[in-house]
Every structure is written in C-alpha cells, then in structure tokens.
Length: 118
Image (cartoon, rainbow, N blue to C red):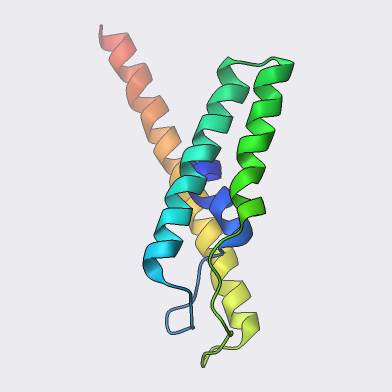
C-alpha cells in the first residue's frame, strides 16, 4: 500500500506545501491515479507472477508513469523556501509509512485474534 499510494507517485510528484504553485489539479489527479494503479498492478505481478515476463512487465509498469511525466507548473513560485518544501515532503512520506505500518500491525493482531477465536 505504501509503495503504490505514497512512494511511487512521490518520485515525480512529491507532496507539496500548501500555497506553492502547482499544475492543474485534475491533471495531477489523473496522473496520480494512473501511477497508483500501475504500481499496484506491478506489485501484484511481482508477488504472484514471479517470472521473467512478470517481473519485466512490472518494471515497465513502474517506470511508465514517470517516463510519461507528472504535470508540472509552468514556473515554480511561492512563499515557501525549497528547504521547507523538502522537509514537508519527507515528513509527509514518513507519516504515511508510519500509518501503513500501524495499519498492518493492527490488521495482523486482529486477524490472529479472529483465527484463535474460530
């Protein structure tokens, strides 16, 4: 989940500080959804179809949205220094990773509890 929903899109479209100039929201959303979908399919291929063809297709799917490129603004402007933007992006990704780890731990805990009760 973290790789598909957070990490893969962040390579070309990192989390943005509010108030910074950005490309059209609709174009960014289309690109983000396409990146999440291709990354999820690629992870599925690696996990359940681990052959040379499956891994090759997964690599192509992971690279395709980044080769096409994310929508970028015409110019980078805003009141926020780039250092704060980088700090914001790294913290946003760290919080996303922590949330996925906690979600996984809770799921594992309740899944084992359900298995013991049955």
